[in-house]
Amino acid sequence: MLAVVCLLFLIPATLATGYYVFLTLLGQWTTRPLLPTVLARTRFAVLVPAHNEEAVLGATLQTLMNVRYPRHLLHVLVVADNCTDNTAAVAQQYDVECQIRQNPVERGKGYALAFGIPSLLAGNADAVLILDADCRLAPDGLLALDQTLASGAQVVQAAVTMGDPEAGPAGLVMAVGSTIENGVQAGLSQLGGNVRLRGTGMAFRRDVLEQYPWQAFGLTEDAEYSAQLRQAGIRVVFVPTAHLRNTPPTDSAGLDQQRRRWREAMFTRTASLFDRLLMSKPLILAQLTATLLVTLSWAILAPGPVPLVYLAWAAGLGALTIGLYLQAAYRVGASRRALFRLWQTPFVVGRLAWVTLGGLLHRGGNWERTPRHVGVG
View (cartoon, rainbow, N blue to C red):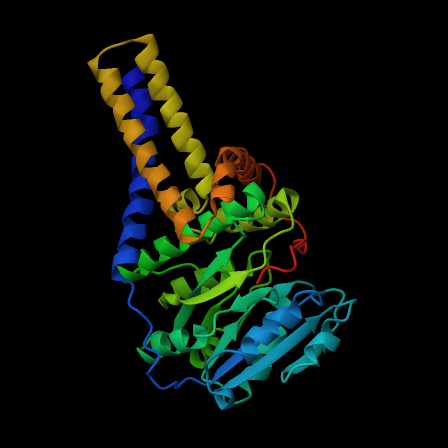
C-alpha cells in the first residue's frame, strides 16, 4: 500500500519534472540567433492598452521609439482606457497615435483591445503587436518578430521576462520563473507545439484578426483568445530572440493579486487538462516537495531497499529541479546578494501555490490593476 501511495506521488512528479527539464534544454540548444542583416518586411501596428499608466507609459513608448526597425513600417496606437490620470497626456508627448476610450460599463483590457484593433486594421498594417503599457521591448524585438512572421507564422509570442532578481525574494521568484517559462515555450515551439499567448508581446497577422475578431473580455483575455485560435487550428509560434521586460509588482501582495488573476486561465473551461496541470510552477514545486516528504517518511518508518529506491528516485527529481532553477537564476544575472535570498523563496512559492489552489474554491471577480515597481528598465 505504501508503495502504491508513493507511486501516486512519484509518477506525476516525474512527468512534470521531465516536461520542464527536457523542453528547457531543448529550447536552449536549438534557439537560432537573430539575423540583423535581414531587411525588415512587416508593417507593424503596435497597440498599447493603457489604464492609468502615466507612471510607466513614457518609458514603454521610448523603447518603441528606439527600436532598430524602419520607422515607416511602424505605427503605434495608445488606447487610454477609462483613465482618471494623465495617461493620454503622456502618450501625446511621443510620435504615436492616442485614442481615448470612456465606457463605465465595459471595463478591462479585452474591451480596450476590441476598441483599438479595428482602427489599426483599417490602415495598411500587416500585423498587430499587442504590448502592455508597462513593458520594455528590446531594440531588436520587432526585427525578430518580423523574421518569424516572414517565415510563415500567423501568430507569434515574444519572450517575456518578469521581475527583478535584486528586488527581494518575490522579484527573484518572478525573474527565475519567467526565464524557465521562456525556455519551456522555446522547446515546445521547436517541437512544433502550440504555445500560450501571454497577454503582451503577442503579434497577429491581419488576416487572423479579420477572420477571428477580438471578443475575449474576461480576466484572462489572452487565454480565451488562445483557446479560440487553438480550436481554429492556428498555431502560436514562440520567438525567443524577441525580448521584452515587464515591470514587476511592487511587493508580494501585488504578486499575489497578479497571480489571482492569472489562475483564472488555469481553471477556465477552455484550458485543457494538460495545461491546467502544468501551468503553475508553484503547484508543481509543492507537489514535488510532498513527494519527497512521502518517500522520506516511508524510508524512515519501514527501512529497506525498496523504500530507499523510491527515495532516491524522488531525490533525483529534486536535484534536477534545483539544477534547473539555479541555471535560470544564473541566466537572469542574479548577484550573489540575490542568491543569498534563495532560502526565502520557498515561502514565496508556497504562498503562490496557496493562492493558486484558492482558485478551486473561488473563481471570477473584477479586473484589478496590479501595483508595479516603477523604475525597472
